[in-house]
Length: 223
Image (cartoon, rainbow, N blue to C red; front, side, top):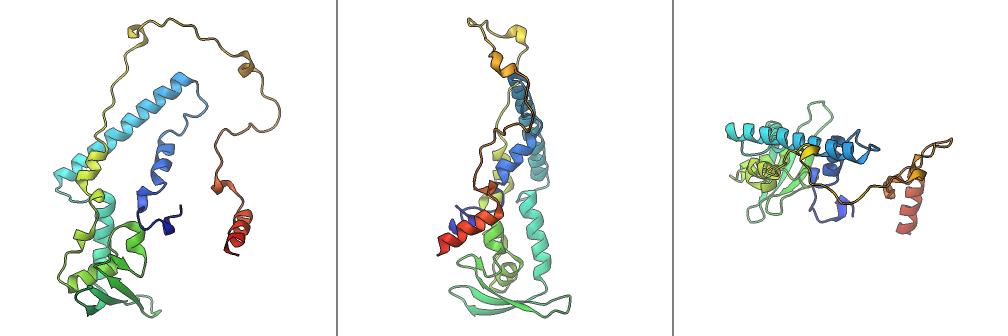
């Protein structure tokens, strides 16, 4: 399901970014024998967690309420919000129009903010899950703290919980339990590769379709 049709449940890293991050961690481990592959997966995953646990501890020591991504984005939007002009419309719905003044001389833009619905017509709030500059400035005019709209999963506490998983070092082979079976290699897997490109083992999905084909399918669906 596209992020634009899921009702706002996915933002930022809650989409496919996490799987892409894992692919980055395991880069170079493909097509290795099984033992090195498992070793690399374990070691890199452990280092990944160690680095982020250290980052979480640093944020806790700094009394930082939100994880780095949310903290920096919110700080930048707070600074940007100072230049916006707010016209309040309804106290019950906490709705307002927000005018952004252009710094390039190209005129201004007006956005609609509805704090009770946690919505801004710019779309950034829904996309990132963090109040945009328009919502921050509107919150100020309604006497509200915009940081209260930041979801709990962006907090330092949630970030630290994410990496509480524990990895155990593996004993040397001389300490392993004896096995009572024999591994038999398949000789067909050792044949020399023929000419041409290797056949990919990756599972293909809709993202592998050519753009032209994807557009044709979309247009056919619309009609």
